[in-house]
Amino acid sequence: MRTPASRRAEGALLRLRVQPRASRDEILGWQDGVLRVRVTAPPVEGAANAAVVALVARALRVAPATVHVVGGKSSRDKRVRVAGLTDADVRTRRRREEQPGQACARGRPDRCRRANPPRVKPDNSDNFLSPVWWADDRLMLVDQRLLPAEELDRAYGRWEDVADAIRTLVVRGAPAIGVAAAFGVALAARQSRATTFDALLGDLEAAIKGLAATRPTAVNLFWALERMRRVALASVGVPLDRVTARLLTEAQAIRDEDIAANRALGTHGAALVPANARILTHCNAGALATAGFGTALGVIRAAHAQGRVDRVWVDETRPVMQGSRLTAWECAREGIPHTLIADVVAASLMARGQVDLIVTGADRIATNGDTANKIGTYALAVLGRHHRVPFYVAAPFSTIDPALASGEHIPIEERDPAEVRRVGAQQTAPATSPVFNPAFDVTPAALITAIITERGVFRPPYDFA
Ligand code: MRU
Image 1 (cartoon, protein in one colour):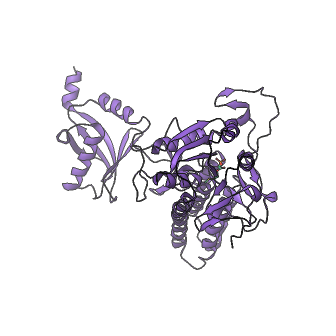
Image 2 (cartoon, rainbow, N blue to C red):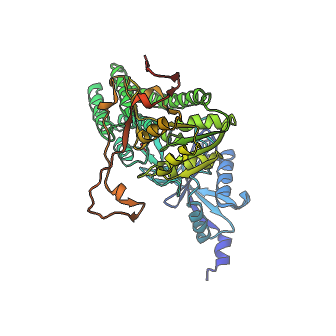
Image 3 (cartoon, protein in one colour):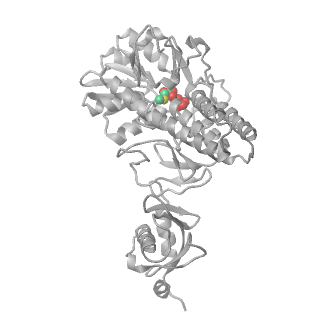
């Protein structure tokens, strides 16, 4: 009879998927019962298998000496025997690994758990948070709908799914939406089966149209799509695989430039922050709303790094709670002193002299400085004027719409009434009560003290030329 002891002596058998020629040895995670790893060398005999053994041992927390590669269908699909464990032991450990905060696998828009937080994305600095990046031929997005309760990355291989992710707020925030859409176009080129340039262009135009139809207010979306279109149009006569590669390079450039812009505007903005500042911000204009670092929260990050921040007042930002769910989460993660407030508290805080400045992001800025941002921003600007608290907008140039002379024509998204009739899963209003739920409002330039960009600080009358 086979007993647990005899099964242990036999050893557990597990399947392994090996991705060779990676930049480093790493565990990608479990997917459908298969452990996925990446190794620098091809998994043949000898040294390469040593890397595989070390990774399996680490994933299962066993001694490398107990792990034996026993063959498999190919050099990528391996079978591994682990002495001292039963198959049930492996299943238990695997389930533990699949809990939030563990290794990340890739998929369609698969659920894909994050590696050890805090996350280090393919950028150069430690503790760098980015909600949008490219890995393994997929667009990766942090699912912002689940934060702060769950940290989950999703992998996207089709532009249609990226459009859906933008529409449903998996990715949100003006610059982040633009970056995601750019990668969506890069994916469309990869999805295309076109054999001629014109046919490829047709597929790309369909994707651009679909991505543009997701959310109307953030101009960064249309700006990024236009950049992608220009790259495609300029590639006439270029072999189609090169066009596809160029589009990916452009999307990467849009991402990189956004991070650089945010760092630069953070530095410009920090110079406006007095010592021991108490700063009020609204919505989330942080790393999560951009490719990284953030706009309004980028200014706060930079000022905090210089020791100037006493406290950040974080508006919870009804009804989608980007302030409490995302901004407070970013501040907590980085040790930025912050206090969460219900949106209705801002006025009395200003009346008591407890706010030194207000800084928000923007979704679209007209050439006269009128600024669309998260609903509630206008109210803060009015309060700021009344209480003599400076009101700053922080945004990259990609948020300025050169085609709009003033804010009156900025399209304002209206969202699902259900967002207002409930808080989370809790119904807080009769299901039949009519709702008005604009996602953004427009703050007139006259109420804005200055607009902070990567090219410096602009003051009224605005001239961004
Ligand atoms: O509806 P959202 O969450 O996409 O709205 C985001 C905002 O309003 C942000 O303040 C804005 O996009 C600036 S992001 C740097």
